[in-house]
Length: 248
Ligand code: BTN
Image 1 (cartoon, helix red, strand yellow):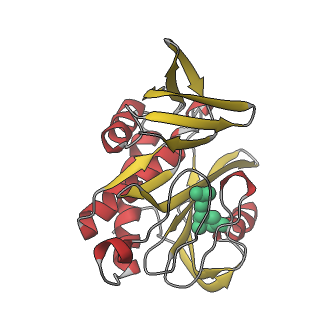
Image 2 (cartoon, protein in one colour):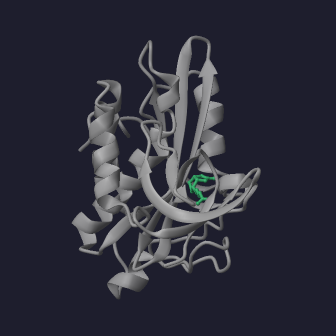
Image 3 (cartoon, rainbow, N blue to C red):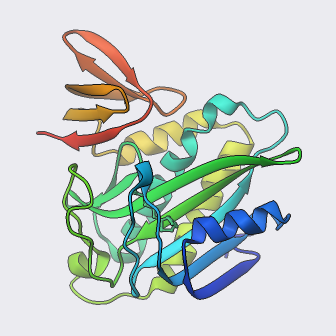
Protein backbone atom coordinates (compact mmCIF):
# COMPACT_ATOMS: atom_id res chain seq x y z
CA UNK A 1 0.00 0.00 0.00
CA UNK A 2 1.23 3.52 -0.72
CA UNK A 3 2.20 5.57 2.34
CA UNK A 4 0.88 8.97 1.30
CA UNK A 5 -1.29 8.75 -1.80
CA UNK A 6 -4.78 7.51 -0.97
CA UNK A 7 -4.21 7.59 2.80
CA UNK A 8 -7.40 9.58 2.69
CA UNK A 9 -9.74 8.24 0.01
CA UNK A 10 -13.20 9.49 -0.87
CA UNK A 11 -15.29 7.30 -3.15
CA UNK A 12 -18.38 8.43 -4.98
CA UNK A 13 -20.87 6.56 -7.10
CA UNK A 14 -21.36 9.55 -9.36
CA UNK A 15 -19.78 13.01 -9.55
CA UNK A 16 -19.41 15.66 -12.21
CA UNK A 17 -15.63 15.24 -12.38
CA UNK A 18 -13.24 13.83 -9.78
CA UNK A 19 -10.80 16.66 -10.61
CA UNK A 20 -13.48 19.23 -9.94
CA UNK A 21 -14.57 17.62 -6.65
CA UNK A 22 -10.99 17.24 -5.42
CA UNK A 23 -10.20 20.85 -6.30
CA UNK A 24 -13.15 22.05 -4.20
CA UNK A 25 -11.94 19.89 -1.31
CA UNK A 26 -8.38 21.20 -1.73
CA UNK A 27 -9.62 24.78 -1.56
CA UNK A 28 -11.20 23.85 1.78
CA UNK A 29 -7.82 22.53 2.97
CA UNK A 30 -8.02 18.77 2.52
CA UNK A 31 -4.81 16.88 3.12
CA UNK A 32 -2.10 16.18 0.57
CA UNK A 33 -2.32 12.75 -1.01
CA UNK A 34 -6.13 12.65 -0.92
CA UNK A 35 -7.63 10.38 -3.57
CA UNK A 36 -11.09 10.91 -5.06
CA UNK A 37 -12.67 8.19 -7.20
CA UNK A 38 -16.04 7.83 -8.87
CA UNK A 39 -17.81 4.96 -10.59
CA UNK A 40 -19.31 7.42 -13.05
CA UNK A 41 -18.48 11.00 -14.01
CA UNK A 42 -21.28 13.00 -15.54
CA UNK A 43 -18.99 15.77 -16.79
CA UNK A 44 -15.61 14.10 -17.04
CA UNK A 45 -13.02 16.56 -18.33
CA UNK A 46 -10.32 15.90 -20.89
CA UNK A 47 -7.42 18.00 -22.11
CA UNK A 48 -8.05 21.13 -24.14
CA UNK A 49 -11.60 21.50 -22.80
CA UNK A 50 -12.72 18.19 -24.27
CA UNK A 51 -15.37 15.99 -22.74
CA UNK A 52 -14.15 12.69 -21.27
CA UNK A 53 -16.80 10.00 -21.32
CA UNK A 54 -16.74 8.17 -17.99
CA UNK A 55 -19.29 5.36 -17.79
CA UNK A 56 -19.29 2.61 -15.17
CA UNK A 57 -16.46 0.10 -15.45
CA UNK A 58 -13.59 2.59 -15.90
CA UNK A 59 -11.11 3.86 -13.35
CA UNK A 60 -11.74 7.57 -12.81
CA UNK A 61 -9.50 8.99 -10.11
CA UNK A 62 -7.82 12.20 -8.97
CA UNK A 63 -4.96 12.62 -6.51
CA UNK A 64 -3.77 15.73 -4.69
CA UNK A 65 -0.05 16.50 -4.78
CA UNK A 66 1.73 19.24 -2.85
CA UNK A 67 5.00 20.66 -4.08
CA UNK A 68 7.76 21.15 -1.52
CA UNK A 69 8.88 24.70 -0.64
CA UNK A 70 11.25 26.01 -3.30
CA UNK A 71 9.98 23.59 -5.93
CA UNK A 72 11.32 24.53 -9.38
CA UNK A 73 8.12 25.58 -11.17
CA UNK A 74 9.62 24.85 -14.60
CA UNK A 75 9.26 21.16 -13.66
CA UNK A 76 5.46 21.13 -13.39
CA UNK A 77 5.37 19.60 -16.87
CA UNK A 78 6.84 16.42 -15.40
CA UNK A 79 3.66 15.67 -13.42
CA UNK A 80 1.57 14.28 -16.29
CA UNK A 81 4.60 12.40 -17.61
CA UNK A 82 5.05 10.75 -14.20
CA UNK A 83 1.38 9.85 -14.09
CA UNK A 84 1.48 8.29 -17.55
CA UNK A 85 4.60 6.30 -16.69
CA UNK A 86 2.95 5.09 -13.47
CA UNK A 87 -0.16 3.89 -15.30
CA UNK A 88 1.80 2.18 -18.09
CA UNK A 89 3.98 0.39 -15.53
CA UNK A 90 0.95 -0.67 -13.48
CA UNK A 91 -0.84 -2.06 -16.56
CA UNK A 92 2.26 -4.00 -17.49
CA UNK A 93 2.72 -5.35 -13.96
CA UNK A 94 -0.90 -6.30 -13.31
CA UNK A 95 -2.03 -7.46 -16.72
CA UNK A 96 1.15 -8.16 -18.67
CA UNK A 97 0.03 -5.82 -21.43
CA UNK A 98 2.61 -3.89 -23.37
CA UNK A 99 1.58 -0.38 -22.41
CA UNK A 100 3.61 2.68 -23.39
CA UNK A 101 3.47 6.43 -22.94
CA UNK A 102 2.64 8.78 -25.77
CA UNK A 103 3.62 12.41 -25.41
CA UNK A 104 2.24 14.36 -23.71
CA UNK A 105 -0.25 12.56 -21.51
CA UNK A 106 -1.58 9.33 -22.94
CA UNK A 107 -1.04 5.67 -22.25
CA UNK A 108 -1.38 3.40 -25.27
CA UNK A 109 -1.80 -0.34 -25.54
CA UNK A 110 -1.10 -1.77 -28.99
CA UNK A 111 -1.09 1.76 -30.41
CA UNK A 112 -4.50 2.71 -29.04
CA UNK A 113 -5.32 5.04 -26.15
CA UNK A 114 -6.31 3.31 -22.91
CA UNK A 115 -5.70 6.19 -20.50
CA UNK A 116 -5.70 9.98 -20.44
CA UNK A 117 -4.28 12.29 -17.79
CA UNK A 118 -5.41 15.77 -16.82
CA UNK A 119 -3.13 17.77 -14.53
CA UNK A 120 -4.08 21.07 -12.90
CA UNK A 121 -1.91 23.31 -10.74
CA UNK A 122 -3.03 26.02 -8.33
CA UNK A 123 -2.15 27.59 -5.01
CA UNK A 124 -4.08 27.73 -1.76
CA UNK A 125 -2.44 30.27 0.56
CA UNK A 126 1.21 29.28 0.49
CA UNK A 127 0.51 25.67 -0.57
CA UNK A 128 1.48 24.82 -4.16
CA UNK A 129 -0.93 22.09 -5.18
CA UNK A 130 -1.47 19.89 -8.19
CA UNK A 131 -4.31 17.59 -9.07
CA UNK A 132 -3.47 14.60 -11.19
CA UNK A 133 -6.60 13.26 -12.85
CA UNK A 134 -6.30 9.79 -14.34
CA UNK A 135 -8.90 8.14 -16.54
CA UNK A 136 -8.31 4.51 -17.50
CA UNK A 137 -10.60 2.55 -19.76
CA UNK A 138 -10.77 -0.73 -17.87
CA UNK A 139 -14.04 -2.66 -18.31
CA UNK A 140 -16.09 0.18 -19.82
CA UNK A 141 -17.06 0.71 -23.41
CA UNK A 142 -14.63 3.13 -25.00
CA UNK A 143 -15.19 6.56 -26.40
CA UNK A 144 -15.02 6.66 -30.17
CA UNK A 145 -13.48 9.63 -31.97
CA UNK A 146 -12.02 11.29 -28.86
CA UNK A 147 -9.42 13.18 -30.84
CA UNK A 148 -7.58 12.87 -34.10
CA UNK A 149 -4.46 11.31 -32.70
CA UNK A 150 -5.17 7.62 -31.97
CA UNK A 151 -7.87 5.01 -31.67
CA UNK A 152 -9.11 3.98 -28.26
CA UNK A 153 -9.10 0.71 -26.37
CA UNK A 154 -9.64 -0.68 -22.87
CA UNK A 155 -7.74 -3.09 -20.67
CA UNK A 156 -10.55 -5.65 -20.83
CA UNK A 157 -10.52 -5.48 -24.61
CA UNK A 158 -6.77 -6.07 -24.77
CA UNK A 159 -6.71 -8.61 -21.93
CA UNK A 160 -9.65 -10.56 -23.28
CA UNK A 161 -11.78 -10.43 -20.14
CA UNK A 162 -12.90 -8.09 -17.33
CA UNK A 163 -10.32 -7.19 -14.71
CA UNK A 164 -10.48 -5.85 -11.14
CA UNK A 165 -10.23 -2.05 -11.07
CA UNK A 166 -9.23 -2.03 -7.36
CA UNK A 167 -6.04 -3.97 -8.00
CA UNK A 168 -5.00 -1.67 -10.82
CA UNK A 169 -5.87 1.42 -8.78
CA UNK A 170 -3.63 0.32 -5.92
CA UNK A 171 -0.68 -0.41 -8.20
CA UNK A 172 -1.12 2.91 -10.01
CA UNK A 173 -0.97 4.66 -6.63
CA UNK A 174 2.14 2.76 -5.59
CA UNK A 175 3.87 3.62 -8.85
CA UNK A 176 2.77 7.24 -8.61
CA UNK A 177 4.04 7.51 -5.07
CA UNK A 178 7.43 6.16 -6.14
CA UNK A 179 7.68 8.90 -8.78
CA UNK A 180 6.22 11.52 -6.41
CA UNK A 181 9.10 10.79 -4.04
CA UNK A 182 11.60 11.25 -6.88
CA UNK A 183 10.01 14.61 -7.70
CA UNK A 184 10.05 15.80 -4.10
CA UNK A 185 13.70 14.83 -3.71
CA UNK A 186 14.60 16.59 -6.97
CA UNK A 187 15.59 13.43 -8.85
CA UNK A 188 14.24 14.78 -12.12
CA UNK A 189 16.63 12.87 -14.35
CA UNK A 190 15.26 9.56 -13.06
CA UNK A 191 11.71 10.69 -13.91
CA UNK A 192 12.77 11.72 -17.40
CA UNK A 193 14.71 8.51 -18.00
CA UNK A 194 11.81 6.36 -16.81
CA UNK A 195 9.45 8.14 -19.22
CA UNK A 196 11.91 7.75 -22.11
CA UNK A 197 12.11 4.01 -21.49
CA UNK A 198 8.33 3.68 -21.66
CA UNK A 199 7.91 6.07 -24.58
CA UNK A 200 6.23 5.02 -27.80
CA UNK A 201 6.66 8.54 -29.23
CA UNK A 202 10.42 9.06 -29.29
CA UNK A 203 12.03 8.20 -32.61
CA UNK A 204 8.69 8.38 -34.43
CA UNK A 205 7.52 10.70 -37.16
CA UNK A 206 4.86 12.85 -35.52
CA UNK A 207 2.33 15.48 -36.47
CA UNK A 208 1.76 18.05 -33.75
CA UNK A 209 -1.14 20.45 -33.47
CA UNK A 210 -0.18 23.26 -31.11
CA UNK A 211 -2.19 26.20 -29.84
CA UNK A 212 -0.45 28.38 -32.45
CA UNK A 213 0.10 26.06 -35.44
CA UNK A 214 1.04 22.61 -36.73
CA UNK A 215 4.25 20.81 -37.53
CA UNK A 216 5.52 17.43 -38.73
CA UNK A 217 8.91 16.03 -37.76
CA UNK A 218 10.75 13.36 -35.83
CA UNK A 219 10.26 13.24 -32.04
CA UNK A 220 13.85 13.16 -30.78
CA UNK A 221 13.62 13.62 -27.02
CA UNK A 222 11.97 15.41 -24.13
CA UNK A 223 13.72 18.30 -22.41
CA UNK A 224 14.13 18.77 -18.62
CA UNK A 225 10.69 20.44 -18.40
CA UNK A 226 8.89 17.63 -20.25
CA UNK A 227 8.59 19.54 -23.55
CA UNK A 228 8.88 17.45 -26.73
CA UNK A 229 11.89 18.11 -28.94
CA UNK A 230 10.93 17.65 -32.58
CA UNK A 231 13.40 17.69 -35.45
CA UNK A 232 12.13 19.37 -38.60
CA UNK A 233 14.38 20.43 -41.50
CA UNK A 234 17.49 19.73 -39.38
CA UNK A 235 16.30 22.11 -36.66
CA UNK A 236 15.15 21.02 -33.21
CA UNK A 237 11.87 22.65 -32.14
CA UNK A 238 10.65 22.67 -28.56
CA UNK A 239 6.93 21.87 -28.19
CA UNK A 240 5.49 22.70 -24.80
CA UNK A 241 1.87 21.68 -25.42
CA UNK A 242 -0.31 20.23 -28.13
CA UNK A 243 -1.84 17.11 -29.62
CA UNK A 244 0.52 14.59 -31.11
CA UNK A 245 -0.24 11.98 -33.77
CA UNK A 246 2.16 9.18 -34.60
CA UNK A 247 2.58 8.98 -38.37
CA UNK A 248 4.94 6.02 -38.80
C1 BTN B 1 -7.36 13.46 -21.81
O1 BTN B 1 -6.77 12.52 -22.37
O2 BTN B 1 -7.90 14.37 -22.45
C2 BTN B 1 -7.37 13.50 -20.32
C3 BTN B 1 -8.51 12.73 -19.73
C4 BTN B 1 -8.51 12.75 -18.21
C5 BTN B 1 -9.71 12.05 -17.62
C6 BTN B 1 -9.63 11.92 -16.13
S1 BTN B 1 -10.88 10.87 -15.48
C7 BTN B 1 -10.52 11.37 -13.86
C8 BTN B 1 -10.24 12.85 -13.91
N1 BTN B 1 -11.47 13.62 -13.81
C9 BTN B 1 -11.75 14.30 -14.92
O3 BTN B 1 -12.74 15.00 -15.09
N2 BTN B 1 -10.79 14.08 -15.83
C10 BTN B 1 -9.75 13.21 -15.32
